[in-house]
Structures are given as structure tokens and as C-alpha cells.
Image 1 (cartoon, rainbow, N blue to C red):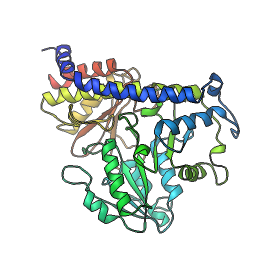
Image 2: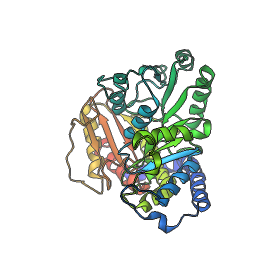
Image 3: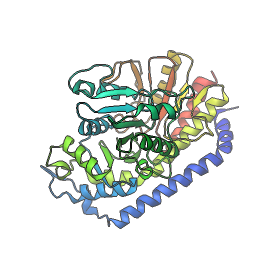
Image 4: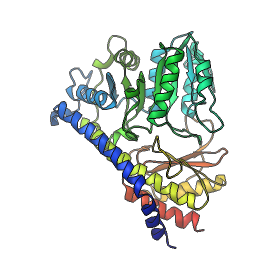
Length: 409
């Protein structure tokens, strides 16, 4: 059977899954559209600003819209936030002090965040280097949060609990909103004063609600992932309780200055329009992820999540057979990209990662993982992590090439 006929059969089987994704997309699109209307968005909000950025109405209104859409009291949305790790790091450094305890309840966090914490090095700039106590609660054998162990680990000194929503470089399930809701209830019962912080990268608009709507205190993410809609050229966001967002703003700018400063150096239209497009773009990515999961599962590969399972983020993990097969997979993704399609990939050292990494990212915005991209660490189990897709048609094209280049060979 040729690749396109196989894809058509898969799409028929996925019809109900796609319809569920589309319902979520519509719900989120309506929510964003109504927020734009309530805030009476004008084209004058799209202008950039300079210097200190005092009185930047476009910036301030965008942050108010983010807060409304995310269900939080306040938000900070800035192009000066260079990555999701930067946004998360700013939150942790702003809130935690020497003697405080932080607990990661989803096992070990993503590689770049381990360096921020000081798991790999305990230099002065890291959390551990600053005198902050850190511990982890391991996942169950099924890769699920260990609720009894989480409850037992939280004490009076636990200042902050970290919940990483996406899988990172692991095969555990990404968290859906109902999973986060259960975790919040367990943490609150153990210590109602603990700050609950969610790394929301890759999870935005994959569900009907966002973490603050299930009483999460603070969350952060990247604009070159889901909420930027493929248009935001850089940046990150923080959303949550007003006093916590203010503390983070003091960390990013300076105490007493906070959100009042920070010029919009890029055209704000890209951030507004990116947010408006985000539900549709996330829909394209989720449909693409489900398609590739279905196809590879039919060929006997282990896929995480399975095509018919629930999805808490846009990432699709596929367990490969060797490091060489990982490279082959990523190379097909790179060769199927609109940018740098002729680049030959290899494992290399990337800042923030302990293992060598291969990254397929033929993207219009450097490193944008809401665009169709794929990466993998050089370690067992040999798995690739595919994410993004501005259009389902591009995802479909890549799947065709993967069938012909890996599965049928």
C-alpha cells in the first residue's frame, strides 16, 4: 500500500480524535476572540516602543488579555524573556530564598531546568547554590504522579512545588488539566501555603482550561511554543496570582520597577496575532501528532501517547531501535522542512544539556517548536520527540516521507 493510501486509512480511523481536538480548538478560539473584543484591541496597540517603555498600552493590554485567557489575576508577556527556561528560572529565582524548600513532584525536570536547580552543578547562581533545599518525588512505575509519596514529602518548609506538565525527554504521560487538578488538591491538603508552580510549556490550548483555572498559583511558558501561534519571533510569559507575578517582574527588571518598564522592541502585532492564531495552530500540531502516532503504532513502534489516548501537550514521543535510527528519523524531518532542508544533522553539544542532542528544526523562527520540529538526546531509551506543525498538511507530508524513508524500508 502506498504512503498516501495508508495516511487516508489512518485519517478515517482518527476522525473522532480529530473532532475532539477541533472542539477544544473552537472553545479556546472563542475565549481568545471574546477577550480581544472586551479589551477593544486597536491597531495602535501593535506599535513598538523604545527606551524604558513607559506607557506602552499595547504591551499592557496584551498582558491583561493573557491573564483573562489563562484565567489568572495577572500576566507578564515580554519579548525580552529569551526562552521557556528563562521564564521558569525567573519565577523560581524571584520566589525562593535561602532555607526554602522546593519539590519537583514529577520526577526529574527537563534537562535545562536541572542546571538552573543545580542538580548538575551547584554554582552560586543555581537554586541549590543559593541555599535552597531541593528534592524530587519519583514517578510510579507507570509514569504517573505518586500521590501518597507527594503528600508525605510536603512539609512546613515546602515553599514551592514544581509541576512539569510536558514529558520533557522522558516517556511519561504529559499532564492533562484534570491531572493537574488532582495534584493541586493533594498539595493543598498537605500544605495550603505552598506555592504551586506549573511549567506549562507545550501544554497551552491543548485542553479546555489552563492551570490557573484549577487553582495553580503561577505558571510560565514560551512564546515560540504554543501561545505564539508560530508568529511570535521570541519571548515568554508568566501568569498567575498578582503578587507573585509582581515578584517575578521585579526579578526580570528591578525591584520597584517591575512591569512598568520594558519596551516592545518587536512589533506587538506578532504577539497579538500569534495569540489569536494559537488555538488553530495547536490544533494542527495535535492532529499531526495523532497521525504519526497512529502510523508508527501500526508498524509496531512504541508511541507516547498512543493515538487514541488523552493528550496533555503537543509532543509525540516515539521509541526507536537505535541512535542511528533516531538520526535517520530526524534527518527526514529536517529534509522535509521549508527552511534549511539541505542541512545534514549530527549529534552535538547544546548549551543547557548534559547529553549530546540532535535537533531537526527547519523553522522560520530559530528553535521554534510550535513549528514542525524534532529532537532527541543521545541516550537510552532511544526516542525522538516530535512537536509542532504550523499546518496539518506539512505534518501529513512529513509522515509520508517517514513511511517511505523508515517504515517501508
